Length: 409
Image 1 (cartoon, rainbow, N blue to C red):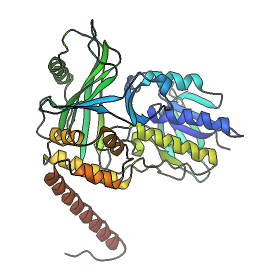
Image 2: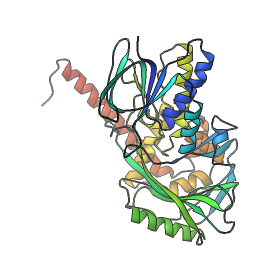
Image 3: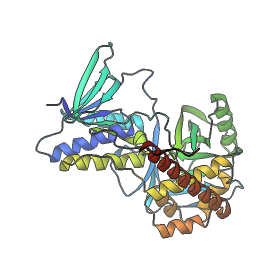
Image 4: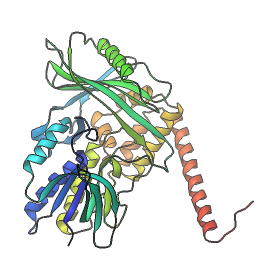
């Protein structure tokens, strides 16, 4: 018998959400699932506290923990034009990672072992998988499980054509007087100076009338230095009229945006979830919603006794559209500030959010496409199709050669 039914590697959004859902599954099952959540001990391998933003209809799983939620969102174009509207039927929401960690750990039942281990390797098998690890003292540890879900950040992927980095730094600020509207957030402000390719923008997420997260973000090939982020944040704060404030804390990070494939099943009993399993939407960098859908689907499969293969959270056509957009931004065919300003100005905000979450219809997507730079996007679409066809032809040629054919000279 394996040591566990389920082993979850990593205590980020994906791992914590899955652990919480398995706790709910245990309440439904006659035989609870013995589960282990593996994380390295506190130290250099522990990610800093961070915020997770997402949107959903109505009240969701994490409603009691929300740091803030907004119905009204604003997008500001590079020319200063403001487009404010309700996000109906969605609400834009913010969670703090520390709150989720405390909640999941506090509600864990006796069937969840929370262990501090450095995972060094995984091996598959017909009846169980094996997790090879070391404990904080350096002793070797081996755990077996029926199913292993690895949510550790993915290594650099091959097979994709375009990779951009969404990199950012934000300040949690506090002002002496009321300065923010807690009911409305600035989702994207495109007035900062733009890079030659990609896009730069700021946003403001109020936590109260005197507190907010003010962030500067770029999509591009390389990150900035902390000093450069600080300068950009200072300039953006001044541009929005924010002058008298205290920086309470900060956050900084990098999210890969790539059209490379991320398989969710990597063995008979080994799976990847979260960003490692393709939960990041390539065109936006949003991950929390996709990771949540994966975790819910895995938990339902476990409850029903099915093979718990994590689904890819996005449809193939949406991933293809994302590949086109990434290529258009990276080549400079499309100015990011122009693309996003047109997209949000020309469409109902709820429809855009539905598309970004993979819940839109083909008809609506075609209508939205006509509001973006059509010529440049058409060029990039044809370029992408040609790339896909050439790639398939190359794979077919290699397959024939590998089967005994001769390569033309």
